Amino acid sequence: MSRARKHSASAAAERDSRAKVGRRSALGLMGLGGLLTAGGVAAGVAGKDLILPASAESGTGAVDLGVGGRLENLIPPTYAPTGRRPRYRRATWSEQFQEGHEWSPGGEGVASAGADTEVFTRGDRSCRVTTRGDGVQSFVRRTGMEPIDLEGKMIRLLFQVEDVAHLDRMEFYVGSRELANHFSWTFHYHSAEGTNYVQSGDWVTVHLQWADVTGADGTRKLSSRGEPSVRSGFTDMSFAVYDDGKGPVTYRLQAVEVVPDTTDVFPKGVVSITFDDSHESVHGLARPVMDRYGMPGTLYNIAGAIGTEPFMGIGQMRSLQDSSGWEMAGHAYSLEAHDASYPELAAEEVDEDFRKLREWLVGHGFTSEHFAYPHGAFGKTRDGVPVDLLAARHFTTARSIISETTESFAPAMPYRLKALTGINDGKEIGGETLADVIEAGGALDRCARGGDWLILCLHRIVEGVPTQNTELSTEGLDRLMREIDKRGIEVLTVQEAMAYYA
Image (tube, rainbow, N blue to C red; front, side):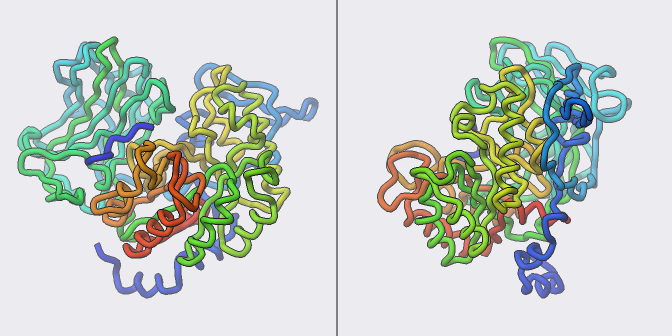
């Protein structure tokens, strides 16, 4: 798992009055028909079109990949997602790299650059840069602009990497005086082994929030809690890319925008506490702790594991949902598909697992339309079909275990929801230490200060000391709940968080 930031407004009186009713109660009144989702074209997956015609003769559907391919012989979803795109957060400031823009490609690592009128996703062109292949920074930059205020704002980036084979990392800077004074975000470290948020050929959207700022220089400072010294007066911006020194990378920058964040709505942010794999310990050990604080969770279930050891049964799932307000979401239909991981299967096998999972959930009275990828993997299937495209046929969101940056409202890419995983309070077992989450300047502080959506991914709960980084002790879970409660951060299920946009 990559992490770029491991070490590194009060509400109006009227809104406060309304808040006393409780957002969770209001969300409960919305119903499932109000669920919404964000995304790109059509189904909202990486800019690919989704077409689902039903054949009267064969009863099959086809997926138009939008990139020169079409997948036939898919059974139409029994339960397609009812969610719709959430309210689009319109930019208050935007550069879309059309003719006449004043940004300049540069850096010693640039081999070539120019306008690309063949590959773009807005207007009639994008800004294309190819790196030199020696690991030196290349960038697209503008300085000397009219000062920009980023208080209560986040930055939205829209870009494409043609082939990620030699991609190393991506950074963004805002500052002044030719960037002598600046803040920086390292928003993507490319992994040679794990699933990456940035995939070859996809148009990718990234939101940069103040919770994720990784560095500062000159007169710009970060406090020990990660608080920036200023949030306004920025005249310079730079989008920077590094290859791995073993070959060039071609990237296209389509938009750099400033959009409102949600600190006015969720001034202390939102946490969603999610659990993967249906472990019985979630019901037996996690639930009593979370019940004490009135905090619900989202459980991503493997249908084929339910009722077998060491997983929970249908009755326990229903009790979590009906008595404690939990969300019963999907993780896989068969245990075999989960263990294999979807990228190891053919597209038809993955789509069939999705279809059976939704049928199973609905058939047992679980109405969530949300999903978490087995092992967080949403790359391409064995036969080259994007897994997130298939997920969009059946579910409203799909969660990963990528946490380079914190998730946002609305999500930048709802079929690649970001989550912090591996949280544990064991000794030298890897993962993410509980201290990094709950102590000063950690993930909770950053969430509470930035009004972000922090999605936590847990697995098993144990009574003693954890021995694996997928385990958290009951004492550790209680500490986590206590720290969330102390900060006044709202806890919502994934379904409730998305339903807010109805």
